[in-house]
Length: 250
Image 1 (tube, rainbow, N blue to C red):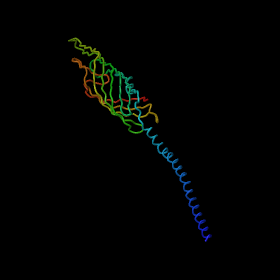
Image 2 (image 1 turned 180 degrees about the horizontal axis):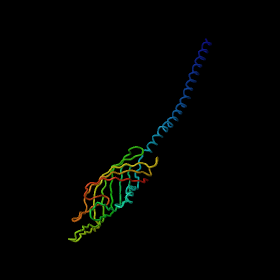
Image 3 (image 1 turned 45 degrees about the vertical axis):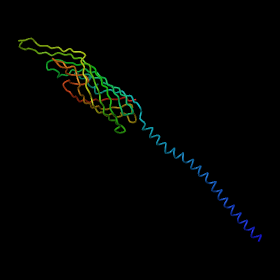
Image 4 (image 1 turned 135 degrees about the vertical axis):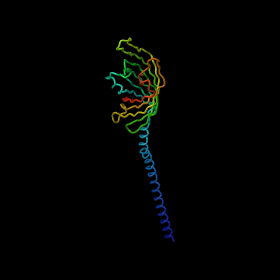
C-alpha cells in the first residue's frame, strides 16, 4: 500500500515538473519573440517610410523661383539696316506653376516700304506685364500659356517728298517730327522651354508664340503712325510674332 502511494506521489511529482518545465519554456520564448517583433517593426516602418519621404521631398514645389531671360532673336536684328531691337524680362514663378512677368525692350524701326517717296524711322521703348500658367510637359520641357498687357512710348521722324520733273510746280516736301506718341495693346501666347544642360534647371532656352491685339494708339490726321516699337505696323490690328529666348532660372 505504501509503495503504491509513493509510486503515485512520484508519478504526480514528475508530471508536475514536466508541465512546469514546458510552461517555463513557453514563457521564456514569448518575450524573445515579442522583443524581436517589436524590434523588427520600426525597421520595417523606416524602410517603408524612407522612400516615401524621399519622393515627397522630390515632389515638393518651391514657393518662388526667380528668373531672367533675354530675347536672342531680337539680337539677330542688330546687323540689319531696317531695325535694331533689344528685349529682356524678369519672371517670378510661384509654386512652379504661376508666373508673373515684366518685360522691357527698345527698338528702332526703319522699314523700307513705309513710304514710296521718303524716309521713315520710329524709335522708342516698351514694356509688358502679365501672368499665366505653366506645367511640366516631361522631365525636360515646360509648356505655358500667358497673357500680357503692353504699352509703348516712341518718336517718329522722316520726310516725304514729291519731285516735279517738268518744273511746272515746286517740289513738295513734308517732314515728320513727332515725339512722345503712345500705343497700348494686349497679348496672348504659348511658349515652351527646355533645359540646356541635362540635370540642371539653371539655364533654359525656348520659343514664345504671341498674338498681339492693338487697343489704341495716337493716330495722326495727315500722315498716320506707321510702326509702333514692340508691336508692329499700326494698321494691322492683330500681329503674330515669335520670340526665341534664353533663360537663367535660380
